[in-house]
Image (cartoon, rainbow, N blue to C red):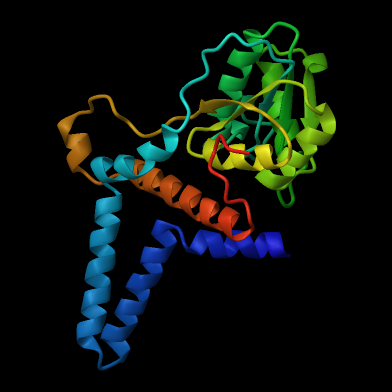
Length: 259
């Protein structure tokens, strides 16, 4: 119950739901109250904020500092495990296997397989519990997609009970102890994940995937026109900022890289 409540409250605090809610309040003031000036201000400011957060220069400026905490893993240190954290998924057997990994999950899987291939003898660990009404867990779905891409099932370990990153860290600790491993998750999520794993007594090697904030050149019209793609980047920045605040409130105040 607490987990579900946390997801609902956290979701309402993200840019799109929050700004739509503020616009609705503003429209309510305009239509059903005498606070016309307040309603106009609320609708106007919410609209302007939504516009700015949907522009590439604004969205990626917010997201880039989070994603740049750790560089892409190109090291040669031997590892026994490559841990890929769970993300969005569904399961539809009629789809191409990779289509069942939604948003951040497929890039995480792709990077995990790349690093697994570069680490002979290593095992791939997938984490993540089942979503509501889903026949398979996030971890099992990722494992099935990996098998479809040529990874032998014997090289895969599925940890399908953790529901969030803190639980994933505990489950990995219980499964592999102090063995060296690469931690693969989205670049925006990795700083928060590293804190959880370090607090669990682990020393992961950070391996970011799914970088989104663009620093290379883009077409001028892509910078000028609002897009749901850039709004998604703002959403990721807000999501991880809220996640770090919640982490601090729970006592996990260490910065990434510190014990």
